[in-house]
Image (cartoon, rainbow over all chains, first blue to last red; front, side):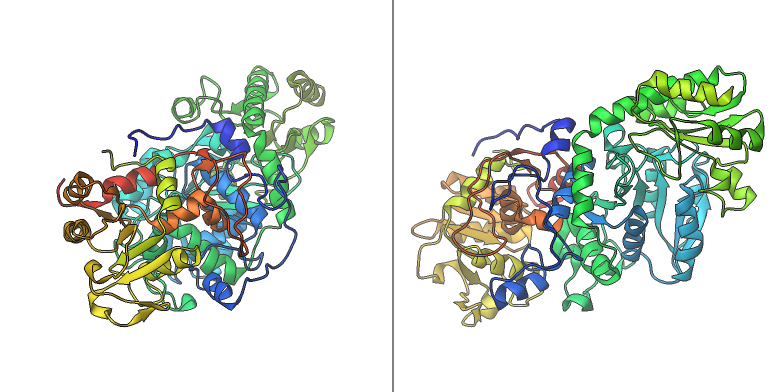
Length: 428
Length: 196
């Protein structure tokens, strides 16, 4: 046996190769789309081993699928996690992750600067399950600490918060989570692992809406849970899905059996199996294809976004621009610490003309698409107060950076002078 | 000898060369990790021999359970240790007394005993500690990736198909190292080790 360690490949190499070897049967080099519901068994013993989780393999595409498995390993490798679980959407990923942590009456602490859809999910759907959110302010880390009670099972935040361009101090929030012995769940959708790998600062679970930058082409809804493998589920009795014998599987203890990928297996076998929001293998294929160019695309997104933000900042009809890549931005110091390659391409700005000027702008643009998504090759524009954040109270709108004068951009990878020209014409 | 990390090629070499594996401390309870390992490696073609003094004389998946290594009436290539770290030295002492000696002593995840390792190595036995041979087989064949697990390998080589079975992948393939994980690094430092 030799001393020494294996050489570690770089991010761009992993973005193309992780999880995807040539198909062992056909030699197909691109990942095949295994568009099948089910997989035959060798014999009854093989079936029993699969159902009992004693061997690795595919049974039924609601639980696992070979195309999805390539995507799961790919994203886990890019995030530096032990395992992944692909889901039908980012929202589905959140339901499954929390299902493995929460029981009725439990609480979790969440940053109040979140994607509006997550705020709705936590405030309404989760409350119907008896999962109670307590909100904290990422600009005041002590507010997370104050929100923790004996019932707290997790802390949830985003790396770069949508839509306000908030950079969360993940290392500081992780310290709070570690002190409380609860897992830190981080939505890394806006940054992607190309810009930010929050596991390095102590995230225990990473969530993605792969619909956005990972897929990157605006063609598929998809979500992902990545298990960092770092949380000790057996320290106390607060996570029975992981630390207690599970009747669903004749008494298997997931943490003891699956070690540092137990959370991902629990999300698959206890949550996805029974709740059902599986990802279509066709969508998994499209997301995989998108990820192969992730480093190239995200750098271009960031470079374009900075140019547009600087241009807007100098425009006389613009009141303010909230982009952490700008040198005088409130979050610039955190951006330099956490995302030195770029601060993403989703940000907001305020029009001096207020609500009416916002409506006029989204009506006048010709290159920007007016729609409710982010993270597309195309440049996108929306007025959050009247769309994505419409269901929030006025107070919540302002708190989450979606006041009436606010316009959100998701800058694409077109030529930047065309993007700027479209805004210039529409503002004229 | 560095026992914090093992090059994939070394682990692959061990799993490709050993044929008979004695599992010391195996459980007959079908939801215990040692049973999972025993059954999986049996299904992958290894001759598996159960060792557990409390169950001696009974059978596990058709194999007679022995009380101790010295009771096994055939040569064994590898001893897989499912005992707490402090018992690993005793298992190594038993292994050294065998004739012929096993080629490998493998201590399971969380099991690490550097004194036992030094003794085994001084007697020409390879040592792996704080790893699971089922996970390593699954990782280096990529079978474990069916469960979304990061194998920390990449390859542009097609694996050869095993002669039989469905969803079985060959261990005999060429890979490069994939990405690292904090968890893998942390797990290495957490293993119990009396001699640290």
